Amino acid sequence: MDKMNITSAQYVLSKFSNENDIIKATIDGVEVSVPLDPSNRHYAEILRQVEAGTLTIAEAAQ
Amino acid sequence: MSTLKVTNLQHASSGSASITLDSAGTASFNSKDVSGIASINGGQIGVANLVQNGAMTVAQRATSVTSVSTEGYKTVDRFKWTMDTTSSVYTLTQSTDVPSGQGFANSFKAETTTADASLDANCQVRFEHRFEGQDLQQLAKGTSNAKSVTLSFWVKAFQTGTYVINLQDTDNSRLIAATYTVDTSATWEYKTVTFTGDTTGAFTNDNNLSLVIHWYLSAGSTYTSGTLATSWESLTNANRAVGQTVDIADSTSNYWAITGVQLEVGSQATPFEHRPYGDELARCQRYYWRQERTSGTNGYVGTASGWSTTEIFTIVRHPTTMRASPSLSYSASNALTGATNLDSRLGSAITSGQPGTDNILIYIDVSGATEGKAYTMYLNNDGNWIACDAEL
Image 1 (cartoon, rainbow over the protein chains, first blue to last red):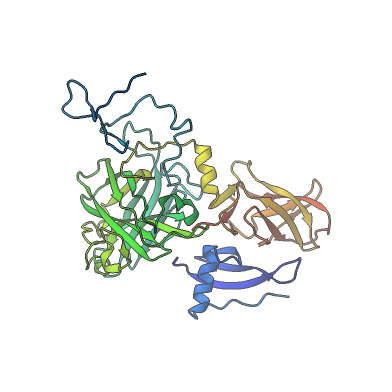
Image 2 (cartoon, rainbow over the protein chains, first blue to last red; image 1 turned 135 degrees about the vertical axis):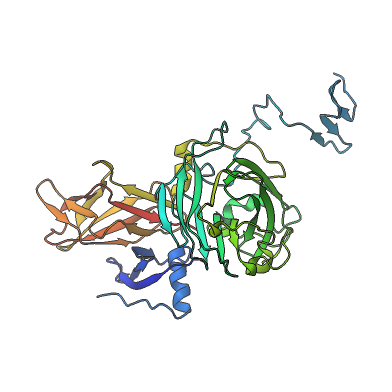
């Protein structure tokens, strides 16, 4: 498990499918575009913190 | 043709046999060096080292980071700094301090800049290397043919004493540990540790994390109160770092440096496998790559197009296929510009799209762009960078 300080997270829509494509997050003070890939350590940690109830992913802006 | 039927081959002036033959046809060599071998079975001897960047030559993120108080990948590629429940602070460096005459140009060095002399029970400070499961299938872990592995490295530290190393199987939550001793302060020493094969718990054959090497630099009682796991066992925190006498956090005099890290199959450490820089860089870029504009060069990201009046996008192909879909980070939200020879549109935000293992879309928010118009996207100042991260 990675320990990351994630202070914000919001889905971004794909311009092609209009479905969630990535999460734009601030991790350890750095803005990061995170893919929705469970093998990606940032996404895995986002999911873990959501599961733990310490993080909410905001809906994508339309 | 004649056949020489003997069980030992021994030099006339030697006290022991150099080659011993048994009835099953196995030949055992009792020799430090076997010279003159061009190939084995007509082929290349092969890659011995399972570790990437073991000579610490690649440091894409930074060559030196000060005031480190959190874990993460900080300097040399593929090696992670981990710390927990300590107020100590460090400077981490890709150093040029190396063991003399061994062919190394770099080492990793951690220097304590703020001490925490009160060791918390849950304190850990570690240096790590992480492996994909698909790269470890040759170890036959979880079978009756499980292979031993040997870890070798050069280490130099201010503090003499006992340090602990773990191999952690993250697929099956298993652990084996060993100790090594730094005998002389401020002196490069060569260490080898052999870990027996584990007949329990196969590594998953995929691109995810399966094995971690942990070099302990500080360990609280949570990790030292049991019995050191000198054989493979289910992971128990109390058995992880028993015998660790050194606490790198306890004084600002402390430092620890390492290079020449090699993990190889078998019970014999062989000389470090020095690889060309380009080969090592490509291996590291499977996990992380970074493009930084320096002295006006290396700034072009790609041919771009106006997606709309407010966005310009480009497709960036990764230098090599990445382990997994990467995260995109950047030096600043306005690090990129889209431009033609007559028109320049400074970006105000950066977003990735359709991130994949081979390529990624990069969008920048602008004003006044033209949909469908061709632009060039570039890093608009020295020091600006973009990076893709698929680390374990």
